[in-house]
Image (cartoon, rainbow, N blue to C red; front, side, top):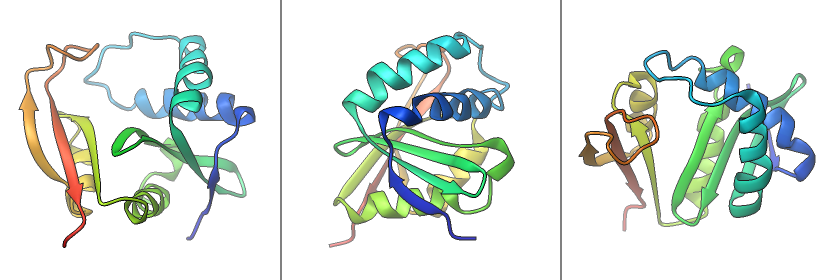
Length: 148
């Protein structure tokens, strides 16, 4: 099912934060370090101000969000009840059309996300022990580059 894509606005901060919070809670291998209030603050005061943010919608509202700062994908999350329905793919393919390369971080334990990125042409370029991320969990850096 195709979703409608659009740029996010300040009015989208709460629905995006709620989607992000709900999706993040699926990552049961991670510690829950923040409340929904801190997610709301982060989306409104950091992500929407520092990034180009696109959302995918259906008749239920926002179902997926992608935040990009240049080549860096800062966030790509999908509402749990809409995972595997194509919204994240639509957002990532649209982001690919806007540049020659994209990079992002992913937790090594997040096998669903790793399969998603690898199936869409992203390649792991760096593995870390997680010492530099807030959760202190091993992660990896992915890169996608347009073929020349």
